[in-house]
Length: 279
Image 1 (cartoon, helix red, strand yellow):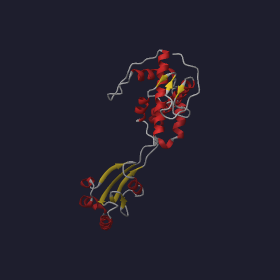
Image 2: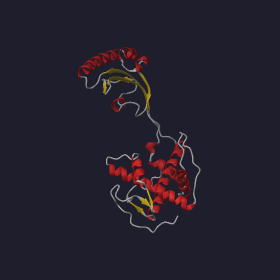
Image 3: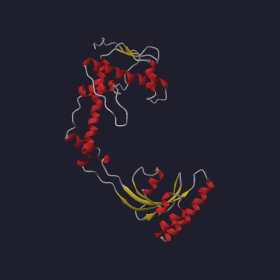
Image 4: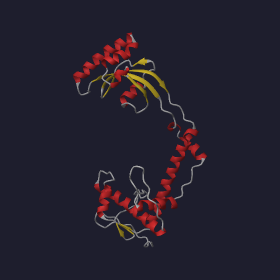
């Protein structure tokens, strides 16, 4: 396909000037359907994002046609199969966008600069007694506080009774296992519980009940295994994959930007838009 001479991209409100790419009009209905995939507080922004996505798709389809590039449709493993256009776009990008393999040195530099990302999770083995009481139910909350004080007093005299007291009073399914929550990692529990649990010394019971949206918790931390740095060899492939993906995104964006600059695009302004998104 021979591209028309580059012209200034026209800016218009949705629906005023038909959106077109090198003379090929993109149907308004197609843009409205695509807009459902673009969340935005303003309908005009969703429309622009949808129009941009379809313009980029049309540009790539036209370029694949011009170069005689096609592809064999692939299945995503979940029952969705590519269209012929999607297969052609994938083949075009694979052919035209060169992505160098990250070097060992680049991977090691990323590993050193992002050490906190490559640590094993801290494991906390804990058990609890849940005295269920909604924060909005003042009477139930007060009764739970009284019972919590009684249980804490009993545990102070005899910590070994934790399992027995959990079975008797806890309103969590873990009560049948002596209140055991197993090994917990960051994000396993609600934030307020996690923050309080982190302050409890292993082998001890919380000095007071921990309030959460579910009620009051009496917590015992059996042990804590602190996270440790993961060896570079264990995360090398993950780092290489991440770096390669980042390079591919930038290279694809640059490739699409070149196509945009050489095309006659009307009805939508691609300046500053994420025109590199490939559908």
